[in-house]
Image (tube, rainbow, N blue to C red; front, top):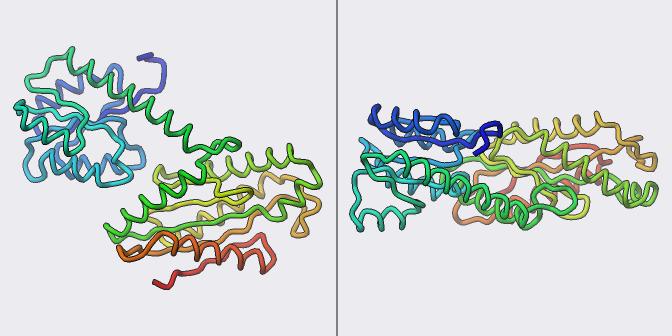
Length: 307
């Protein structure tokens, strides 16, 4: 790995200070290393706004063992793609099969061989980078580079199921560029494409948390999926989106609303249940967006789903 490039991050989870120190000293030259001493701490780091690229996870720990931690990681849509390598003295075939069935990608047995640790960490970090690149290509909108409709639908399903399981609020902002057809008619389609790119960049730059996602829903319509977000938090972000876009002052002389490009937004928030579907939230956010447009555009309407 080029040491001048951005370092990938590794989380070491081990309740034995000696083992953790050996791994830290071994991996620090090439990786950004964090340490957790138990399963609860591991899940906290993995679900943080800057999750690790790979986890080295001890199996035998007091309280929550490594198998349980791995199950939690793989059941959570926000952490399920983080590769997990078990570090353990258990090296029987049955133990390894159990780990692979849960979702681990590899095993490192104690006592550690530095050559083996470095090789396996390097291999799985590189595989994750390549996997993310391919996934991003298949889930990215060709013009704007942000998530496409396919990714929107997949992530909404993940976020919905996770929020239902954890009884957490899930918010959605549906966004439409005001009078975009008139913008294209007046300035041309190349300028229209450039406008879509600028709006997309504004959305992604306004979102701060890794778990939030902006996507191109279709044409000039966008969606922002906001897990763990209350209606107040979603409304605050919607206001920021509107302010940040208007600060660009993209000319739109035929707008009819004002002299630059603006957006209308529909916001909806719900704590999902297992008996409901994401379509419920999307429908209400769409209704809020329609109301914002019908009331004059360049505004935000919040509605609450009746579930």
